[in-house]
Amino acid sequence: MDQYKISSSNQSHTENPLHTKKTEPGELRELPSMEELLLQNLVTGDAEAQIRAATQLGNLSSKQRHSLAERGVMLPLISMLHSQDFEAIEAALLALLSLAFGSERNKRRILKYGALPAVLSLLQCGSKALMELTITALMILSSCKANKLSIASSGAIEQIIEILNRDYANANGMNTNKDTITISMQARLDAVATLHNLSTCHHIMPSLVSSGVVSSLLQIIRSCEKPSQLVEKAIALLDDIVSSSKIPLKETAGTCGAIGALVETLEEGSMESKEHAVRILLFICQSCRENYGGLILREGVMPGLLQLKVDGTWRAKTMAEELLLLLRDCSSYGPSNQQSRNEVIEQIMQEIDAEGEEVAGSTALRLLAKLSIMQ
Image (cartoon, rainbow, N blue to C red; front, side):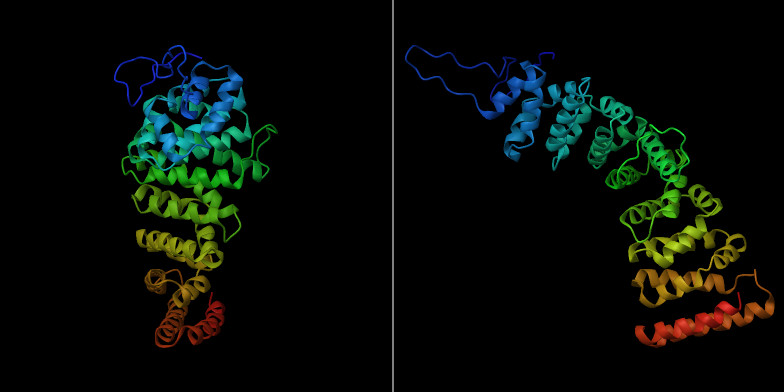
């Protein structure tokens, strides 16, 4: 491995910090510290010594890791990412993540020192363990505000979405390539979390939308069991994206099966997922009630919507009531049937508001049975 000029906190010149002080005859020689030994092995050691040093770095204290970061330990670790040995790459990546953990400065340094191209190349390396570790690395690095634009412009978004789409195809028997890697649930969570980190920068949102993220998130919401943590993360991100502009909102509303998946989440998802689902459905209905109101009703939204009006959070109840009012006047039903339906919905809403939650819940279920006959 190449030699590096590593700066030392107590040296202002380029003298090698690993150089030990000469001892006079009869003088005891000072032993190098653990940090100095690790640096020495990473810079001048053979492959086995480098792997051992990188592995040991993760076991050091926060103070020791900080000291090594100040002395330039990231440079030899980043060089190890270009190795052909998967064990060396994994050890180096884990060491870099241990340096990044809890340190915004080190997260910035990792990208500043040129690690991103090597990290992205690992998404195509063919090793499931390394691919998943790389996704975790991108999640951690993308949490730093200063890194977001660099990561987004590097092609990382497209690669992550490709991995999620490929994973969906594998899970549903749509991929004919038997060698394609299926990532773990934790890796999927990390992938969606990475996209969410990047979405917090409004300059990146157009790139996210144009990369096909809406379709990928809807696939997750539609195909995963509910409630689940993955659906929670996916629908939370979709909510943020849909609320950002009309383009992703229109794409969501027009995607086959999307409204059905949102209604299903409204019924079966966690309370957090239900809140995001009703918000997205409200956005869709507000965008064009004539086009989407009837479709939302035909997907059977009323039971989940009325139940949310009973036991949802204050925010969810408010949005559920707003959507109910929009759907009450939906023109997809005949005049007489629509009037009867409106009366039942009005009755349910009044009784929910007037009664306690337990009584209101039983009242809502009784009136829902009446309402379902009209559909």
